[in-house]
Image (tube, rainbow, N blue to C red; front, side):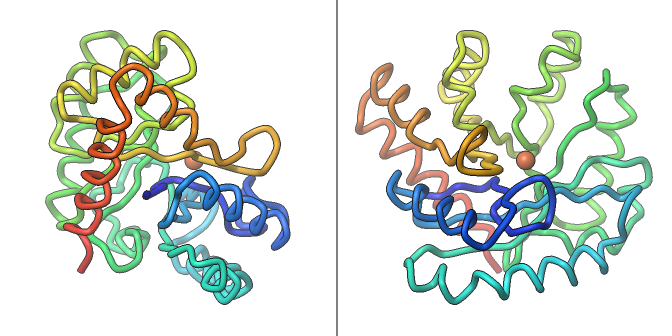
Length: 233
Ligand SMILES: [Fe+2]
């Protein structure tokens, strides 16, 4: 099973605080059936350039790579790139695509969106030839009008939801609707630590198994893995 959104790299952002914590996170993920994990540390263009981010990321990745291999979990490295005006023209930000794939995880700003943001992201996708994955779409809904949110869902992007979305009524309804529409493209845990924001893929698994069936969960997660594989270079 694939977890496409996580903050497991030690001391990269507000996620894992140490190599030990990373290992606890990896072990817990494995226990929940995760076999492939994408590290997506936060990237903020107003604070750092991609080159510096990648240097820090390589440094952190080296600290955990061999032990992750021993645990038998496959790691990919990307970033959770917060949208910024000018992203469409930035060539260096393209380096933040998930390693070895043509996918890039984009976080939308937590303000109400103008359609200009959509236009710019469309240009970014076109210029970069990358495929945008919009991070945790359930978290934006309260801030957007229904119209704008629905418009987002019509864009040719992949939509990622966090496992915890299955925990509360409104976001669970959205998640089930996305499954129905065939538009829950990826699930992630967005895990940051082992306590307050732990690996929690089980939440999604239990909800889908209960509301649909264990076979449905199996199909959904296999489709996500296939989709990911389809974008590996
Ligand atoms: Fe995140």
